[in-house]
Length: 134
Image 1 (cartoon, rainbow, N blue to C red):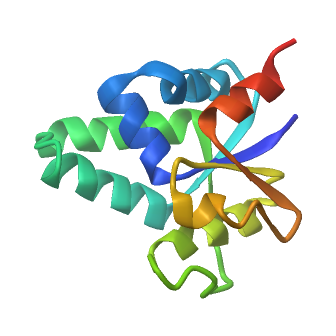
Image 2 (spheres, rainbow, N blue to C red):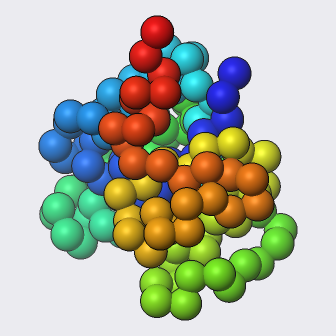
């Protein structure tokens, strides 16, 4: 099974707008992909949902718990400093490395411009869905 890490923006988009990003989370729920997440990603997601989208704390906490049901949590030990323009993007790369991911899915231009990192393909949500189509 394909090992995937989703950037925080994929979760934010899926949870607030649905669409292609939500289809990626659905692939994980249906066990068509192995989705991995880390504590820094979940913390960033929780902060964005509360601050930018004004989600109540209880809803945010419940949603993060639900993500942990279908995404496997990894604990990165290596600190990376690859993306200088947006330092928190390095937490996404750290998660992908720790997970042994083959795909990192993101809408973030700082990550997408890399194309790949340590044999991890960096793709858009649409590209991942196209890869998963029969």
